[in-house]
Amino acid sequence: MKDKNRKTAAKSLHWLLTREYLVFFFLVAGMAVLVWGMAVILESYAGASTGVSKLTAQMDTIRKEEYQNVRVGRFLGKGGYFEILDEDANVLYSSLGTVSNHYTKDLLQYVDDVGKTFFDIQPYTDEDGQPGYVIYKYDETEETNSAGSDILTDSDVENLDGNLRGIIVLDGKKNILYSNLDITSNRVTKKELGILYNNAKDLTYMMKKSFRTEAGERRYLLIHMEGYRRYEASLHRRIRSVLIAMYLGLVMILTIWFGWKISRSVNKPLSLLKIAMQSCQKDDAHPGDQIVYTGPVEFEEIVDSYNHLEKRLEESRQKQQELEEQKKKMLADISHDLKTPVTVIQAYATAIDEGLVKEEDIRRYLRTIRSRADLLTDLVNQFTEYSNLDHPEFHLTRNRDDICEYLREYFAEKYEELDLAGYPVRVDLPEQRIFLDFDKAQMRRVFENILSNAVRYNPPGTEIFAALTESADEVRIRIGDSGKGIPPALRDRIFEPFIVGDASRTSGQGSGLGLSIAKKIIELHGSTIALDAGDQGTVYCICLPKK
Image 1 (tube, rainbow, N blue to C red):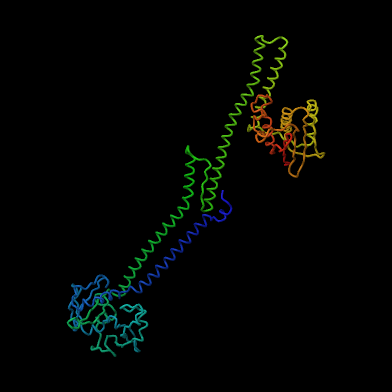
Image 2 (cartoon, rainbow, N blue to C red):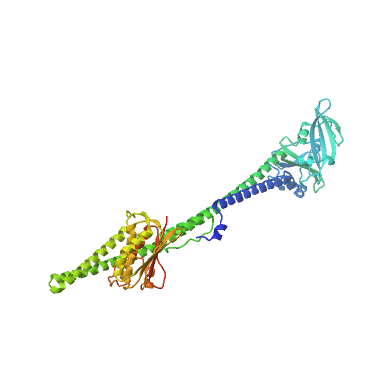
């Protein structure tokens, strides 16, 4: 069984499962927060500007006019492409050969310059309730763009007041009412307005970058990206999809891992029990083997219960083996005890029948035959009595009576018989009345068997005595003799059946069942009988409970 310290340190299965669940919950929640933070960071840095940066990073190739070597890939978004315009806004090259666009120099004025300028258009209503537009042009600096991208976000636009370069005021028909910018036209076309709203006719967002070729000619790199909002949303969806997939994968891994841990904590003791039970069924099993296990309290208790059961089974096996040996010995002893008088009776009867006995010896032979028949009858009666005490239908007939008076009457009856046989009797009983529930006939059998042994194994002159003392819970009766005592080799086995002083069983001094019967009767009374330790004589102590 477990020691106290180990049991105190152990935790219950409920506690362990709760702990694993809380750890799992906080890990999943922590990963969710981490993934959300990563999404926010990635979405703030991974805007459409990344595509512009990747394209402008290839300016050396563009200046060499090796436009077909410029990599576009998918970083400009779905439908994104670039064009090369001369200084008069004529298209010289398009990375998307199927597209044919026409531009004017005035239109290019309203296209954002990569990393330099940025337009913002806001509708308004004048004092007369007439609609109009205000176009703001800002200088884009490193301080303006907090994310360091080529495209300003909404949060960046809110902080552009300090970088305002100029404004254009339009009426509802898009006529220019006021401008402090170098604008040559008097009105803004619908196409130009669409560009200002970051919405070209092909639903792309346009940016330009002015450069000179290696030959010194001015050119414009006109970049068409997927509409910024759509591109940003698409990019964010991709980022979120990847992060969600990663998160779900981690959750699945954690679920499998925690499931394995919990399953292992449950399967380990069950496997140990299964192996132990299977080993018990084998012919070469080692009975009494104990399972060593530490874990949840519930499983430790199950393992401890199994270990206790295995210990009890091993004790039962040993007890059964001892009983089998006792049974064999008992049968041999019964056979010997019965055979001895039967042999004498048979031999004497045959001698008389065949006329081999003298006339004057016949009566002596008959007395011997009778004594051996009486001994045989007594043996059979003791065997019967001993087996009856184990019968399930046997029960005591108890009556409440004064145990002191009962002992006085018994020893008064036995006094003359013992005194004539040469065994003085000394009885020490209290004067008060002590009432107990006991079977008078069976209790008499106990005293008879004890006194019979005292007379059988001790010479005349040996004193026989009895004494009774009372305590709060029990009555103690000490009964014995001052004779030669019981050999040390037999003291521990004196109450076993067929134990006699002569190991060869040739003395003819009884069957060895007397004390076994006495012990059974006392135990049926819920009491105990034991041999007192002492240097002289033989003393038995009987403890009878008062209730």
